[in-house]
Image (cartoon, rainbow, N blue to C red; front, side, top):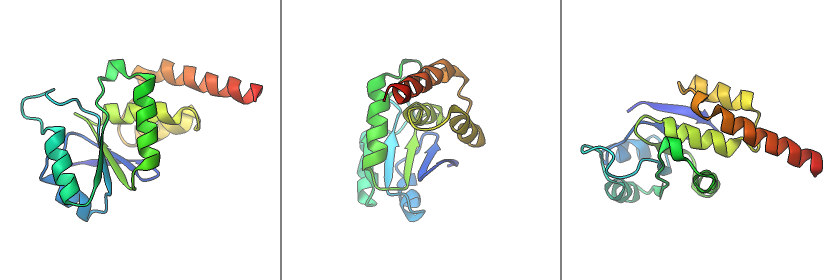
Length: 149
């Protein structure tokens, strides 16, 4: 299991298995966010199985399943709220870690520079090109709100 750091107690990974939860807890993780819909692949662990093992290991969990091309504002909001509410450090996962990274980037666009977001994503090995327009739109909204406020 390869874990990549995005910063501020948030890490991302590809699909995990129930047997990984004991190791994650031993490494100090206190929460897990699943961004992968159940049933995407026949060999994928279900969220129920992940959740059960996470709870056995004293961890909290959230299920925010998304399709990368259909991430909604509600998905971004749910992810942002989970980051604020869950005990840290947090591991978010999906098939490759990309969706989790996209959700993080979109949730941070209201408070961080796009350069910083891209730098952190790139350092973790993720390219934000597919959501670049959305990130720019969110940054523009933030800037116009700052001017108005």
